[in-house]
Amino acid sequence: GNGTVAQGTLTLFLQPMAGTMPNSTSPGEMTFAVDGSAVALAMGENSGDGFVHEMTEASRDALRLLAGWMAEGEELTVLSGERVVARIDLAGAAEALEGLEACLD
Image (tube, rainbow, N blue to C red; front, side):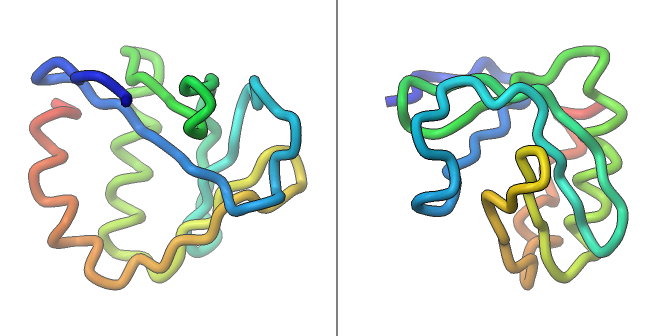
């Protein structure tokens, strides 16, 4: 498992689409794009379960932007270089993201 995330922190987990990241253990930066706006986040391996970004002071503003875009957007696309590794329909995301602001303040 992924263990426990401490209260007040934010950890972003990503499970890429099947076949999009063959033999990849460290993707480096990934681009998170919503309806034409994008931010890059450093991603590390998560024990073979996909990839993870642990919020830092340096990434806090990018995560705030991303959360806002996701709450209002239609689709999140995640890219590793030029390769699309995830597409996520954001219908209903605003409600699901309601408590996120507390982690980003």
